[in-house]
Amino acid sequence: MFGILVNLAAMDESELDQWDPVVTRQMKSWAGRIAKWWFRSEVRGLENIPSQGGALVVANHSGGMLTPDVLVFAPEFYRHFGYGRPLYTLAHYGVLLGPTGDLFRRLGVIHASPENAASALRAGAVVLVFPGGDYDAYRPTAEANIIDFNGRTGYVRTALAAGVPIVPTVSIGGQESQLFLTRGNWLAKLLGLPRIRLDILPVSIGLPFGLSVIVPPNLPLPTKIITEALPPIDITARFGADPDVGAVDAHIRDVMQTALNRLASQRRFPILG
Image (cartoon, rainbow, N blue to C red; front, side, top):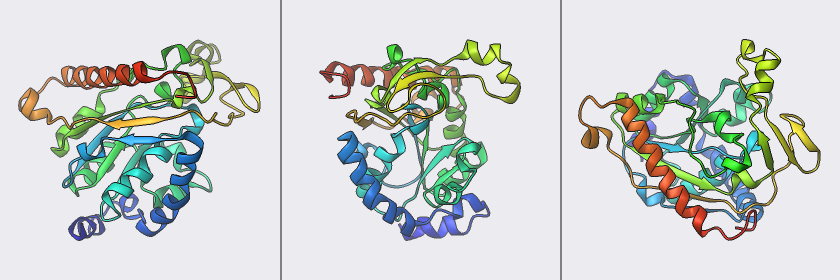
């Protein structure tokens, strides 16, 4: 564990250096309680994440703007592995803007760039990525249990470049935190928003504000969330030294879809779990 910290401290990438295990431990003490109390959360399969070396955790994304995914996963990750091994979460640059940006950086949130991801993975860290991004997090309730990354395959190239396994991870329940009606692709296009790199304008219904078009963000309902890390996939061992990125992506999504279908078949009621 100490060796990992030394490697990270020696890197030039200031974003990675900003991870603070003390602040992370403090945040876990209450964030974990919130996740357990409000979402009755369960995180399974953490033993599938390799105990040493870098690993890319690839997950589906749920819950819209106030997504609970990291709130649920991170406390259990540190409970399992301790604080000698950071968990970095790749995020859109907008997440790191404003007054909360410094706190998020201390918790291991970094800009979603191939360079950041590769540096962290080569240093032995675990990196959490949601390839579907907002497109996935705002999927309609009718498609809540569908794995769809919107054609994004960069995560495969990242894992290949760093020489690390992919750990497919699925979560269920987060998309029941409110009623998601549409991603609003058509609405965004109608208003010319793609010109400012905004391809969706999601519409949802929740509490306490009712109808929401991105804002105001409704508070998540206390839906039961189950997250499960699946066995790691060594891309080179399975697909060869020069794999077809599309084929790897299709396989990863198929593995995740099968697991999500299993979790969905075990779910008795929406929200209640």
